[in-house]
Figure 1 (tube, rainbow, N blue to C red):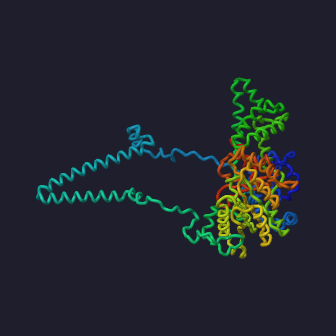
Figure 2: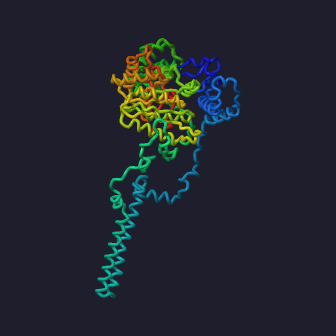
Figure 3: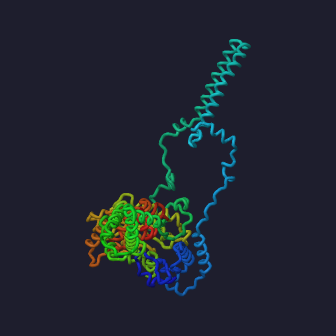
Length: 612
């Protein structure tokens, strides 16, 4: 473990291991606290739990000393002492136990089986039964038929009994008495039919028909609560109604650690894919038959020659189609395959490796490198730096219509509040109807989750708005000045959605950014797009450069990738956006609740992208 300054940090090709003679080192970087976690072992050993061990140690160590890191910073880490030996031994023991193969299940003996409990008589009886009763799916039908026959038989015998009894009674009863008895039976039957019909649910369902107001989760039917005329605006929080609702219901994650930005989760199935690839590559050679097929297969596996463009072209063509199917822009997929071909051309293949596996490995490394741009954005560190200079840290959100700017702005506000920073939201979308009310609702909900009583009487989030039809650049300037005077830590500027081809709106956005000089300009894009992502980012950057009056125009600094939970494994938009801008994906939106915010995990995205 050490600070981020060692030689390993310069290797950004996705390969986090280093081999020297008989030793292999694996490492993992923690960019938030500038740490490096290293594990070393003999190369000859096949340790399947190394990745799990280093991930567990990283998580345990970071969580245990998080407060110390935040207080002392990177320089304080070097002078500190950490009692972590017992924790490390425990994690090592758990990792070793998890890697042990389960013992094979012992086969049951004949005495333990169900068949041994059957008698000879039962076997003979089952043989004499009809074949259809032996089928599992028809056993229940047979039993139902037997039950129905028994019921019908009993019903048939019942009238006979009644008739015999009635015949006996008729001999003793007079005609008037018989008529009276028949009437009673008639009324009794009708009463039973009425009871049966009342038991059926159909009349109830008909009664329940008709319009009823839908009650939404966390909603409130109280008219006083729904009156927003005296809501929180420009710091006046006294008149704002405080809503009562369950925080667990709003966040839907009881086991989450407050203030922590979790990585994207992924499941790697690379071994199964490699087996499929090896089987597919060996199929054409086995069709030749005889010794020729065997030598052809060995020639494809053993590294006897250097790679040529002709060897790689069929594999690269399949890889290109695979990337395009996963939502990578077509132009970028072609450029990626071209760069991989140039990198591998003339390279001697390793022993027992196929062309497909070699190309796939090189492509994976290139993809991880794309998703890890050289400029790293650490929002929490930059906010603390702005605090030392007694000024608010300003973030501007921009993007096309309907990508989730306001929703993800609220998620980032919640994350900042849980890390102890106060937030002022500037409502600079003065065009879209309901934009200010949406931010007002988020402000009210965030204050309900983090009331002033929990923060020493300090309101952690407020809304600065001037209504609709105003100049967005002027509202942002006033909000930043208000935040500086009131001591807010962060200002989040929400802007109107605009298409990249709309010149007047792009000019207004460039003016807002040029006048207010935010610390961070985030482009909000959805993960659903493919080729459109490239067009949006290129034209947004071009418009910001063309319409800016400054000599060095301010461009996009980072990306917020939204709606990531809707795309399954079609994650190509992440590759397209980072490739075209060389800017990092700072946040990933994965749902609708405030805690559905993640940091990008390059391995997770590449694993989903390469999945067949």
